[in-house]
Image 1 (tube, helix red, strand yellow):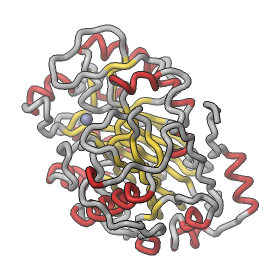
Image 2 (cartoon, rainbow, N blue to C red; image 1 turned 180 degrees about the vertical axis):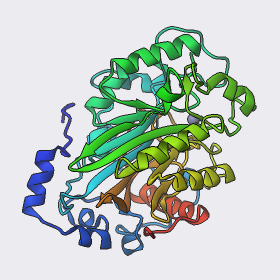
Image 3 (spheres, rainbow, N blue to C red; image 1 turned 90 degrees about the vertical axis):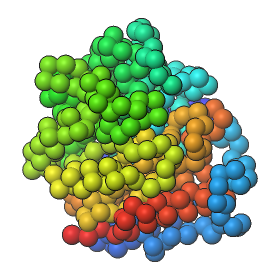
Length: 404
Ligand SMILES: [Zn+2]
C-alpha cells in the first residue's frame, strides 16, 4: 500500500455502519467496545473492562522486562489496516489519545507529507484523535542548553493532520527548546495551522483557551497543561516556571502550579458549556510505571473542576488506564512517534463517549519501530503491554468501569 490516508471515521462511514448494524447505546455501555473483538481484525483493541481482559491469550508467559520480549512479527514496512467501527452505535463518539510525538534524529524523516504512514491504522476509527507534540516548531532560535532539545519544521502540523490527528497538546518541556524566538515561530505556525494546538499561547488566557468541537451533537472542550515536577534536565521547578509558564501578558505554556487556578477555573466554566471536558497533562516522573503523588492529587483537582477525560504523558512509559469515579483517566500513554527511549512499547487509548459521558475505554498495544513509527504490537509484545496496563491501573487505583 502507498501513503493513501485510510481513515474511515468520517461521518458518512459511521452513519453507514450505524444503519447496517444498529446497536443500542445501552448495550455499548454494558460491553464498551465488544464489537471490536467481533470484527474481522485479527488483533482487536483490548478492553480495559474485565469482560475481555485477555482477548488473545499470550502464547508465551508475559515477559517481565522489555529485554525479554522477542522481536515482533510485524514487518517494518507494514501499513496496518484500519480497525472497522462495526457495531459501534452512531450515538457513540470515540476519542483516541496517543503519547509523545517528536521529529528528532531518525524520526526527522517523518516530518514530510509521506511521513507518519502507520498512524491511520492506529487512530483511523476515532472521531477525535489527540497526541502530545513535544517539540518547538521552528528553524530558528538558539538551542536551550539542556539534555535534549527538539525542533521540527512547521510542516509537521500538516503531516499530523493528514494522518488523522485532530488536535495536539504543546504544554510540555520541549515547546520552548529554542527559546523565545522558537516560541514566537511556534505561535506563528499555530496561527496558520489547520491542526489545533492547545496548552500554549501568547498569554495565560490564550494558552488556556480550549479547542471546542462538536461531534454528532456531543460537544467537547480540549485543554492541555503541564505540571512542573522536577525533570531529568530541569531539576529546579521554580526556574522552570519562570522560564516556561505563560503569564498575564507573556507567552508560554500552561504550567501548574503557576497557572493552575486559571486552568481549573476555565475547566469549571467550560464544563457547564459542553458535554465533555478533556485535558491532556504532561506530568509525572520519567520511566516510572505508577503515577506520582503530584499526578494523582492534580488529577483529583482536575476531576472535581469538571474534567471528564484526563490523559497524560511525559514518563515515556505506560501508567495504565481506568476510571476515577466517572472520569476516564490514563496517567501516561508513553511514546507514540519517537526514537526508542525508556520503552518501545506503548498504547493508543480509546475512550467511548455515550450520552455525553465516558462509558468505556479500550486500547491498542503499540510497538515503536527503529524508524520511530508506531505499529500495532502483537504476540508477547502485546501481552507485555496488557500486563503493564493492568498493573498500572492497579497501582493508580483506577477502576475498570465508570462510577457515578
Ligand atoms: Zn516530556
